[in-house]
Structures are given as C-alpha cells and as structure tokens.
Length: 372
Figure (cartoon, rainbow, N blue to C red):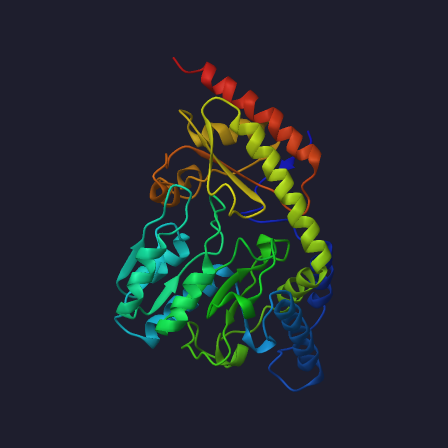
C-alpha cells in the first residue's frame, strides 16, 4: 500500500541536502571550543551553518543561537525575560503553543489575550496590556493547529514604543514562507529545523542584536555564553544545509504549491456534510488546513485514514499526547474535541492530495454508518 504523509506540521522528512551535510559532519571529531585542528574544523562547520541559517531567516550570524529545537528556544526566551524583569506578567494569546503557555506560567503571572473565531488576537486587548510593562509579549506568527497568521507589524511597533520584549514562535512559519528577522520587529524568534526538512533535535533562538538575556542552560560558554553544552554539530550542519537548499526561488515555488494543495483540500472536504474549515480564510500558513468534523471522535477518523495509508493528525490534543480538549480550538469558540489537521510539505504530490480527497469521505461515511 502506498503511504500518503499529511503530518508535515508535526515533522517533515529530512531534505537530501540536510541528510548529506549531517552524514558528512558525523565523521568529524573534536570539541568546537578547542584550538586544535580537529576542534577548529568542527567550529568552521558550525559557523558555516550559522551563516546559512542567518541568511535564510534575514538575521545576522551573531543573532543566531543554536538550541535543541523550538521548545528549548521558547523556554530560553521565557526564562530570560523573567530574569530580566522579575515578577512582571507575561502576555500571550490564548492559542499559543503549550510550550509557550506552560513555560510562561512557570515564571510568573500570565495575561491571556482573547482571539476571535478565525484565531486572530484581539489587538485592542493586547495593546492595552503594554502600559503595565509586562516582561514579554508572546505571539505566534502562524498557529500550529489552524494555520492563522497574526498581524505582527502593529504589535511589534507598539512593543518597541513601550520598550516591551516581543517573542515570536515561528516554528510553523519558518521554512514555509519568507521570514525576515530584520524586518519582523521581534526581539526573539523561536525556530525548529525538523518542521521544514532539517534534522530533528536542532533549532535556533534568534536574539536581536544588543539584547542580553540570562541563559537557560549553564555550564559552559558555548553559543557566546547564551546556551551551555557541546554543540550538536552534525544536526547543526544539516540545519544549515536545509536552509541553503531553500533558495528564494525554491521557497516561493514550495509555498505556492502548498497553498494550492491546501486550497484543494479545504474546498473539497468542506463540501462534505458536517465538515467545517477552521482558521482565517485569507491570513493563513500555506501548508496547513484544520477541519471540524461534526459528531465523530478524532481517534476513529485518524485510525480509519491510517488504514487507508494516510498519516494525519487531529487539531485536538486528545487525539494523541493528552486527554484534554484543544486549548486553541476552545479559545476560538469552536468544537475543541473533534477536528482533523492535514499538513503538506516538500514531498507532497498531487496524487497524495487526491488520495485524501477520496479517503476522507469514505472514512466519515463508514463511521457515521456505525452510529445508532
């Protein structure tokens, strides 16, 4: 049976360029913090990768701190902001990723900002909090469940005016659309390589030039004293190579293809009885579509699709890691228990899309036939 992978938003297959660079770096031996030839060779590879990542995301090389992934980057941003302004609240939208929400709660009071039914934040409510001088504002660029993009420009301008840190979780947007750190207006941006075809276990925290934050991990002076621990040189090399492979032309082509594929999925599946498309109709990530499925538990839908060779995910957390309804969908005021998330990527073909358009109606019909 042919398999059709529609969970790129969770993790995308490793790109050939990333695989080649990772494998080549596995043969290197040496601590990049040492001045012998072996160590300096590893250091050279890491710095080449840093330049590749910085160039792809519109940052300076010195603004890139490598981490184990977006979760660690988020934790570092939350910790650093709390140490910089102890006791001050953190402001975040009600549909931020759990890594943001839980880390922010660990370090002090949190003020949640409401979102509308499309997933866009209440800008008036958010901007009104800035006069309280919060420690930091967290705002996703694109949501991980419904794909809604936020209006970052106005938030960034207001944060600068009030001298409040702005952290942007760009784990879903990075590598999917143009992201220029210099123009974004954020102080901190979290990224993860495996979301767009880099290796697992590596990411970055982009830190605005001149901003000093206490490091989350202590023990060494790696990453210019911003993140202790021996660098994961092979994964970093793969991360850099994946970024270098995404030239502006390749990125634009992939984004256009992803938008076309998710539009076909949204249009075709929303025509089914009891199926609704969630998220903003226009301001959305290119690679992700989330559907509300009336009256059917997500586990049954996912298992039915898997039986037909399709790997997908539910926007509801109860379908996998936890047992609670999705906080994202709950914040939007829609059914937080029953949803289906389909996400495409660099390996997705038109045949894959056609397979989903045929399989979902079949699975829903079979499950509904089982109901009394």
